[in-house]
Image (cartoon, rainbow, N blue to C red; front, side):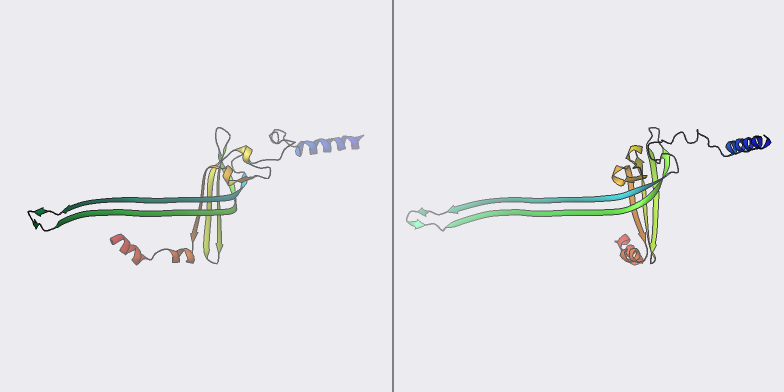
Length: 191
């Protein structure tokens, strides 16, 4: 009898000590995956951006004018000297131009939820920095995403992010060799 009471006391103590607070887990659904929805939750942003633009322009203009005067005649049986005058102008212009730009970015960035807006949308911010052989590349992403656009594995495509800001910055030997030197910058500033 005493052993039974001790067993029940130990069982009661263990139940009270290691129980779960159901209020803490009440927001989790039994039927769906846990999706990022709070400040600090991680979201994987799959960046697939492709842009292409082209512009063609062609202009043709022309103007032509001619003025002429021709005079011949006779007085009595004497012929007068021939007189002739002519004036002409010609003006032509042909112009053509074309521009074309293309760009493509493909990467994955882990971002965190910076804040939750009043309508339930999430503000994401993320940075990815890689250094390979002294070449540093930093990718920054920022934007607003709806919770419904976040997949069950907490990933979202970049084209689902509104007000998206994606920037890629590089620093290193290659970047330094592509920028003009200080003397060239000085001459451009003076002239």
